[in-house]
Image 1: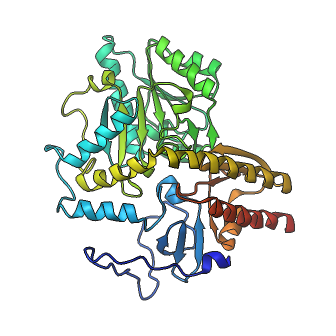
Image 2 (image 1 turned 60 degrees about the horizontal axis):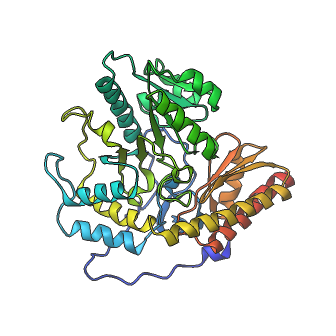
Image 3 (image 1 turned 90 degrees about the vertical axis):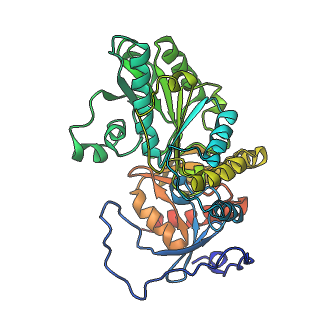
Length: 421
């Protein structure tokens, strides 16, 4: 274990207005009753601070997973903690969407004033945002295309949009799709190039194209800005909605508030989730007035989406992520980090390619990614995969250049393991 990580953290100054929370720790291990839908690391994490996580054996780990791009400000963040306390002080955790709640309205106003969007629908997760976007696209198509033939959704090779029935049909991963066939009809996957998409996108039958500006699960692949502009032009020409899935790549991770901004395009719909509330569950569908005007009361809904507690915290998170100084630091430190990763490629024949932007990077390796991830964990670094041979590195947005340098050293140690083997 790296000595810098193993050192104890300084306790934060207690706020007398907030009751002290005592961690609940089982006196002895118990058999898990949670359904086996994840291959979990052999770790039980009991606390976190900044970019560091601690397990029940007292080991410290530099977290470069961020809860899979969700914990934007790491752990035990003073601002997020204060926002949660402020929200709780009202006594309102949940309200029905049949009444107006001010935090939700403030968050929606912030998002529409900061982005292309005119309206927002709040839900609880990224996959709900994607599923909602598909429904909204089909409702739009039926409203403005009287024949009703426009209904198809097209995704692209390498995509990941979720694991519910419509979203998994748009996800290019056989292991996620095959056990659940037949999938939802009217959703198909095209090759990730303009000629293939030009063939697939039909002005008569296609309602929407969905694409990630930076593919996450598909290997951390940034889409070329020119390619995105060509897709926007093509979809406009054929009266097809452009849905950008920014659940993982949006909200500051690329060094821009939304990942598509450098391409200079205006989408019809953007889906957001993961870091939106700094770790609390929330999703959002951002949409133009044209899409929103097609929706009628009762056609879509959510019980918990947009509740006052989570939207109050999300507003705090969004304001901080939108800070130009933070976004510039992510761009600059992200570029530096990418250069260091390229240096590892030069030093290790097992590294085949490095891709990414900001605080979102993929490293292709010749051996199974799981083996490198295990050795990285032994060295004190937590990373994840993006395919069988791709390491995915997603530091919290608050990670410093010193934190990133520490991650490079640990990853170097993990990669040396394959050479020794």
